[in-house]
Structure formats: C-alpha cells, structure tokens
Image 1 (spheres, rainbow, N blue to C red):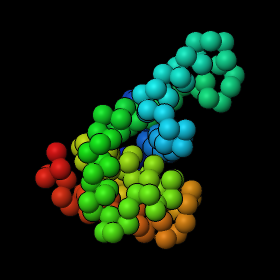
Image 2: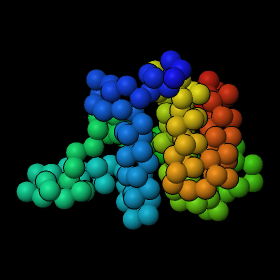
Image 3: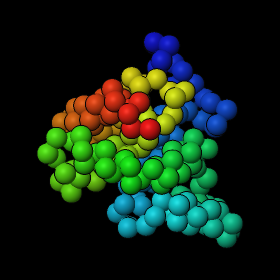
Length: 158
C-alpha cells in the first residue's frame, strides 16, 4: 500500500477513515440535491433527529467529523464549485450529469481545492472509486478527469 493510500485509510483524529467520511458526505450532498434542501439545512435536520429520541433511525446517526467538514465546505463554496464544474466539464452541463456524479464532483472539488492536507492523487482516486461503485465505469473516468483538471489549476481557483 502506498503512503498516500495508507494515510487516507488510517483513522484520523477527526473520527474514522476519510474514505468512510467522504462516502457519507457524498450521500448527504446527493440527498440534499435530490430533496432540494440546503446542505446546512439537511445537517440541522439530522442534528434535530439525534436530539429528539430518534437515535435508532439511520438518519439520526451522527456523521463523522470529516463528513461534516466536507459537507459544510461544499455548502460554503457551492456557488464557486458549480461555476467550476460548468466551466471545466467541456460541454457536459450539470443538468446532464447523473445526480450521484454531481454529488461526488462537489465533494471532490471542495476537497481538491480547499483541503491541503489530502494529496490530490488520493482525492482523485477516492472520487473515481466512489463513482465506479455508485455510478458507472464511464462516470469514474469523467469524475477523475474533471477533478484532475481542477487540481491542475486550483491555485487560480482560490
């Protein structure tokens, strides 16, 4: 296992593995987009469930801290990320992208551009792996390519 892969899989002080946190963040972003909810609004709904005696329900399970960091980061930069995806997807508008691919791209774009402690190749591989598991093999290539493009120009995006 490479050092980059090892550092991504190892539990972090933020709670759990980044791979698990990333997948959960993608699930929450996907849900918010499908339900047409704000990301922060969805996080608040989940927190309210935890405090209402519904702790046994899957939606009431507390998300890992890195998941919250990712979802909050996507929420803070959602407009920028949307513009980047529109600009660099080479004629493939978000409206034509599978919803799960969009969710992966939003989380991946945030992580590539704003999370300096995770190497870009780790983020790209993780996003491609999620796309391969949750969408299609073609989606994995598309997601990896678009995030790779953002990684190359991220200094100009901040």
